[in-house]
Image 1: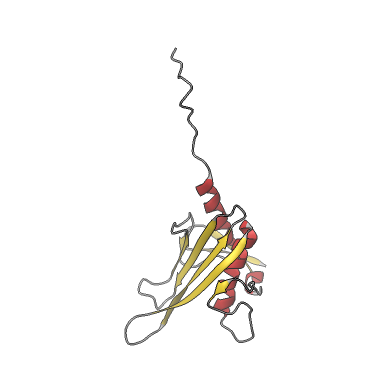
Image 2: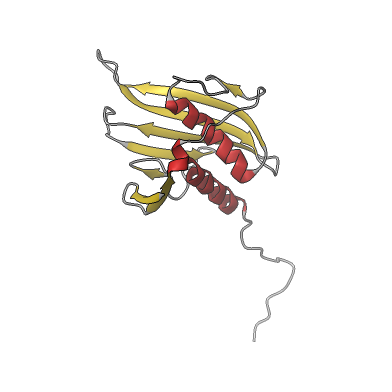
Length: 165
């Protein structure tokens, strides 16, 4: 069962119940600051964070390198949960090192709810919105961004003279 959700008014995003049922596991050699395996009672955001790295590698191919999970809090005397930031690093099938950050702030954040995706410090098309899309969709956005970034520009042959009529 899927439903269409508009994120930030920027187009449809597809969600499936499977997006919330997956259990993601990381290899032992992946550097991370959360457990590599899920366990009963752990925060669901940890599974989402592991899933970001797994889905990126599944989409692009390559090797997972590192995962950093950070909870954001409001400033001031009341430290309320404001969101989370997940940074995933991997080496893709072409050997390029890629760093992807998903930054999500909730209702207690100063600017209100929003989500931002960066790939090597660049925001891809559709990389912002009110809510994040599903993990496979995020992996697709990163994949498309990297493909566009790596496409060569127009080639101009400087050795061939231009013929004028």
